[in-house]
Amino acid sequence: MVAASPGTRSLPACLLERLIGRPAASWTVDDLLALAAERGVRLVSLMHVGGDGWLKVLDFVPQNHGHLRDILSGGERADGSSLFAGLGLEVGASDILLRPRLETAFLDPFAAQPTLVLLCSHAGREGAPLPQSPDTIVRLAGERLLRELDVELFALGEVEYFLGRRAGEQDVYGANDRGYHATSPFVFGEALRREAMALLAEIGVPVKYGHSEVGYVQASKADEFIWEQHEIELGLAPLATAADAVVLTQWVLRNLAHRGGMRCSFDPILRRGHAGTGLHFHFSPVRRGKHLGGRGPDGALSAPAQWLIAGLVRMGGALMAFGNRTEGSLIRLTQAKEAPNTIVWGEFDRSALVRLPIVATTTDGRAVSPPTIEFRLPDGSAHPHLLLAGVAQAMIDARTAGDLGPLLERTSVVALRRGAGAAAPVPTRFPEVAEALQAGRAALEADAVFPPVLLDRLIEKLRA
Image (cartoon, rainbow, N blue to C red; front, side, top):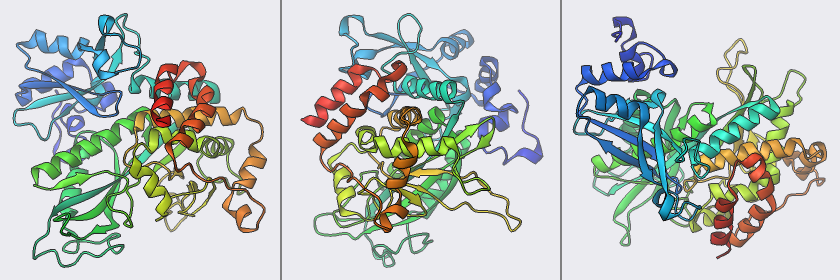
């Protein structure tokens, strides 16, 4: 193993890249075996995302060098009928395989014993990717996008959350709707947020920035906790990596809050009348290394940007099945505190379903980050893997629709302001989401990306 030199003690940000001395994409089983020996690893955890969108884990105590090599190389079996209940894996033939992805390895920052963690994909009994797996679905969607449109879609999540703790005499500064970018001592969650950002970077999750948000809920007789809102915006990454980054961020935040005697909530609405918790996603279509999410020198949107915006406008209601999954999701949309309630798109407009944010530039005009297209509909209840897969499928479907120009014109904020547009309302009842999903299911099922049984079950649940 190549030790980190004195000049690289803090960069790269990922701890294992510093210790191994190479980018994660090039790690081998032998690299991780050497790391485990050097760091005295006692446990190995295979972490993966189930059908419900939650992280799951399977723990091992390696008995010897050969046992550890087998775990890293081959993974282990699991019960698919429990992990993906109701999705066609019968109890009598439900064995699946967990396949570790070496490039995702990290040392668990919360474990009492030195523990090596690897994220896993799922395979069926024959070794092929499991169709019901969220990881499989988002990877298939990304591969199809690249194959059919010659575009790789990058994404990042804005992970908003509320921290709660019992109110004390020191909590005298908080105020509703005044916490945006506040610093300590005016917010109590700053230290936890900063620790989360550093830990995320250490385990290989790209982070852009973090800050406190507007939400603040005072303690009351009904709830003795005081709550304040924060956000961590992640870094752009390919779809599957971006989805993993969201669930790992939520995992880190929950663990830190638990350790600090606090509560962490991603609920879309913590209290009626207060700021909701969104999970906005930014997207950047990339073609041959060039980010195409903004306007060109001539002021025109690139073709991939138009396909993406049109896909989000056309299928926004259907995507709520993956991005807005609780009753609080509907409350957040109807109380309209910077939450979109009509299907429109525009630049800089925070009330739009889709918007093109401003891009920060240096004094000589160089963009410091790629232009992105922001989807503001999802919230903290989202299933990120299925949502991002759905966005990719919607983008492909929009490209073949043939009416992009008129669609983008009539659904733009500019057209609406001059009385020439038409804005449909966002669904506000789950049966309406079910009908939107039913109408868009052919686009989602195209090229066998989404299994029909998964959509059948979702539609039944939404209609009920």
